[in-house]
Length: 138
Image (cartoon, rainbow, N blue to C red; front, side):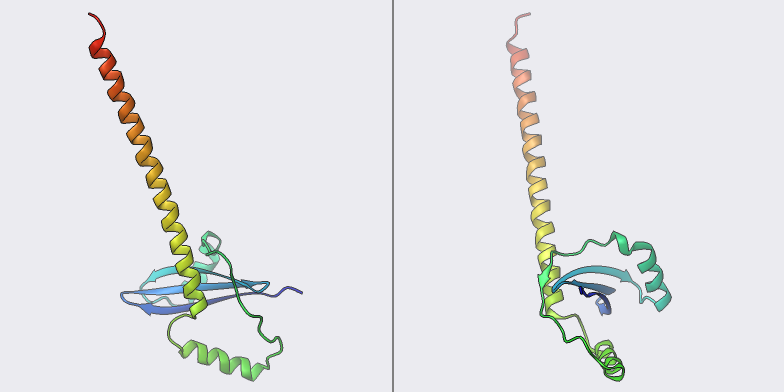
């Protein structure tokens, strides 16, 4: 059976509070980064998840190792406490965020280039039209 999990890590990245959503499915992990601004309360985070989670743009999937399934309750609580005290985000999550950033940067560069070429072609066509009008007889 497939295991789906989603984890939110909120931390302070000067000067804003940032949340990183880690979503894993079938040994693949995707990451999305959200900037909260001021320190979010639990209620604010819950409201944000309910209203805007579907708008998140996740990074391309990164392969991860499968975790052992059976973890006892007390151990889970201890691990959760350790994770909440830990600083930052896991390296896999950071790699996924950087891949997403690179992909967006490449996409924006391609769009800007197309726009530049379109404007140059339009400018050239206008220049040619003006030249033809100048050489046209009166």
